[in-house]
Length: 168
Image 1 (cartoon, rainbow, N blue to C red):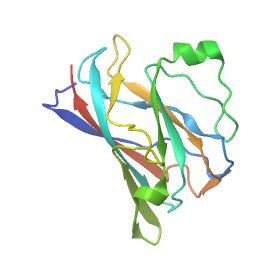
Image 2: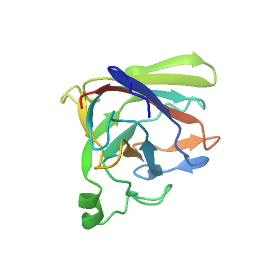
Image 3: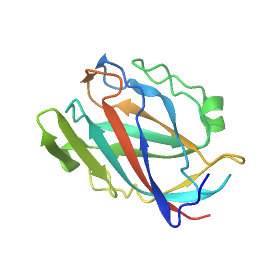
Image 4: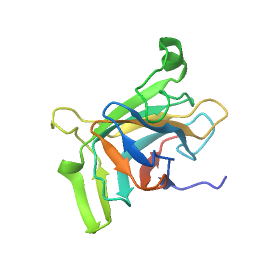
């Protein structure tokens, strides 16, 4: 792996459900963010997230970040993770994403949103967030919970762009 001087911009396209996903359902299986840290077991600072929505859905969701890959449940079903697995996942943090406050329409079929600070109610700072990879890894993982009904046309309609600053 090459070194990036100060950080990285990482594109990740999880496999979302094509069709309707209900409120409080898992949006996609826990997905790797490769090179989230510069060195194995290292840390970085998540300073921003851009979401590119090719289906122009613009729905609210909660993102959950973790050191280890543990699914929160089956996509298109309610979250169902045991307490033991939740602890083993080594949760790093969560971010609530509100498209109404940060969304930008690009075209009739695409939109994007950028999150870099406070939550949807402007009551709590969510970023920057420290990310830490498990020993021997440079990856961290994330998943999402729907906060309103969603209906993506294709499984690759949502891309996340993670802006990270490497710390060690």
